[in-house]
Image (cartoon, rainbow, N blue to C red; front, side, top):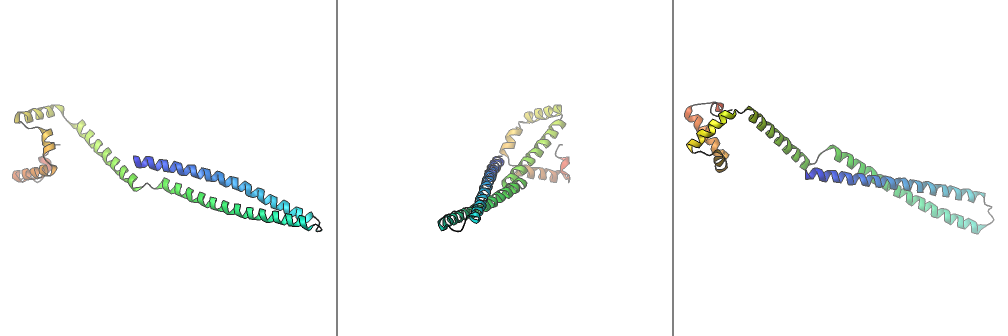
Length: 180
């Protein structure tokens, strides 16, 4: 159960990170488009300006080179963010499909306990309460306490006692000794 909660928390945190990175990609995309537009405007201005003023041309080329550097940097950042986003999305998808080892262990244990409970319920419904009361009275008359025996004697000893009983009675089917 703790593993499932931890897995769910991890998935939610990854989903939040994916959402944040998606927003960041959108912001960087807009900034990239703005930088592209500025570069295009600067190039248009440069082509329309007369070639007679070299100082303006130098300022425009310096501004253009700075914008190109900024554009290159923003493109690289965008590429990295998109890679991270793709990686996180694939991680979220893969975590959603295959359970971890601890989750599988807990699932198997839950299924085993569910089956045990179903078996106990079936046995409880099939029990004749009058027969059980008679049996309990007989055990009390003999001085036997079933609860104390269950706690004091290991299961392996019970198995060996039943096997010895079958051998002495020459019974090959154990169901003839054990009541249903």
